[in-house]
Image (cartoon, rainbow, N blue to C red; front, side, top):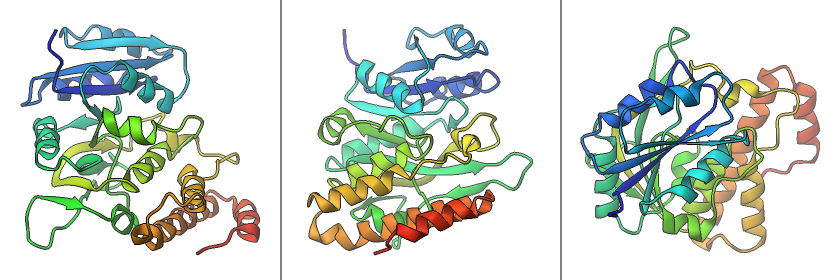
Length: 284
C-alpha cells in the first residue's frame, strides 16, 4: 500500500461539540493525499463515537485510556504511516490550504525541523480574535528562521495546531514530554530548534480556539507545574547540547518563559507561590 504524503494526528478528549468542525476542516483540504489518526484519549462524552461516524476511509479512530494530550499525540506519531506528521487539536481547525502549505515548506526547506504557519487566536465572545504570525523584512510569505528563540521571546508564534514535523526529527530529539499539564508543545519546539531551523509560512492558515471548554489552560490551579521547557533548556545548557551561537538566545528564552509563568501565578492570585519561586530562581 502506498504511504500517504501526510499523517494528521488529532488528539481527542471530551470535545464532542467541536470535533466535527475539526474533521471537516481536514476533509476540506486542497491536498488530498493524507491519513487522519484520531486518538480518542478516553473520552466520556461520546466524542469518539462522533468522530467514528465520519464517512471517509482515510479517517481512523484509535481508542485508548486517558493519558493526556502528550500521550495521545505520541500514540499518533507511533501509528503514522507518512514521513510528515501534522497536528490539529480536536477543537481547532485549518484553512483549506494548510496541508498544501506545509508540504511546500517541506519541499523547499529540507533542513527545517519544524514546518509551521501563522494562526488566528479565536476568543469567541470574550474578546476580538488576534492573528499571530511572523513579519518578513522583504515581504515574502515564507522564510527560514534560524533563531527560533529570538522570535519566540514575546509571543509563541507556533501553535500545536499549525505545525508539521518529520518523523526523522522525532527520532532525533524525542517526542512530546509526558506528564506536563501545559507547555509540552513549547518543550518540543525548543528541543527541535536547538538542532534545526524553522520553515514558516506567514499566512494565517489555522484557527486556535481558546473559547472551547476543557483546554489544558483551564486546568491551571495551585499545583501548576514548573514550565517543562525551562527544565529542558537548563539541562541542555548544562550538558553542552546548545551551540555557542544559540546559547545567549536560549538563556533569554528560558528567562522569558519563567517570567510569564510567574506573571500567570500572580494573575491567578498565587503570589505566594511566585515569591517562593523567586526566592531560589536565578535569571540569566
